[in-house]
Image 1: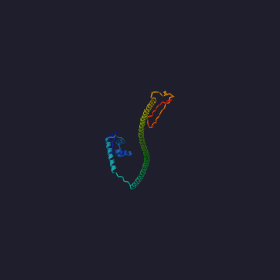
Image 2 (image 1 turned 135 degrees about the vertical axis):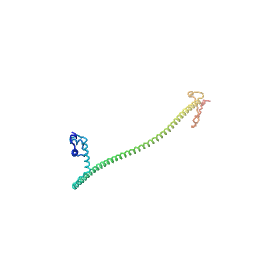
Image 3 (image 1 turned 90 degrees about the horizontal axis):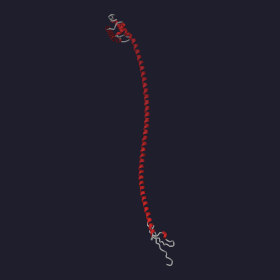
Image 4 (image 1 turned 30 degrees about the vertical axis):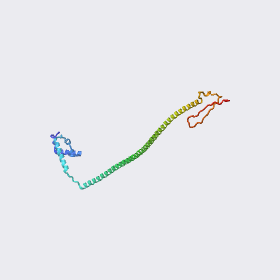
Length: 244
């Protein structure tokens, strides 16, 4: 059905809209045209929406200008209840804020304790690291000193080795000169012996040719011990025969 079949009046729309507002517990703006049409058993047309808009406008005017008389006793009761409610809410708010404050205070204290513990632990670790660094630095200085001492000892050993090598070379040269002098002395001695032998046997005879029954008279002159030569001279003389 539509509005042509059923005569819809403003009073009918007002009553239907008010009933819907009461049932839905909503504001006039929340009452919809299709709800009013359904309640009235008609179609939601343009005319119905115009009536609903008029009702909404009048309800807004009433809400803006209406004043309800409240007895003083009811107002006092209301104010007392509101005061108690405010005090209750304030107490609840205070307890809540105190609980929150205590929670965050405990959390902060716990965090501070943890941070302090971490700081102390870090400080101990830093102290250990610094101690290790100082020990390492001292060990390094000692190693440098040992290295410098070893370097000086090595240089001194090299110098001693050079001196010993020079002395060894000098000894080798002296040994070679001594060996050469010894050979020369041996050669000179052999020559002197040969010369002495020739002087003893001027005729070219051998020592074995001298007869045992022929006496040999040998004169030996004094030898100067400081003289390296053998300056002695031997003379052989025949012994005078019997009757000469």
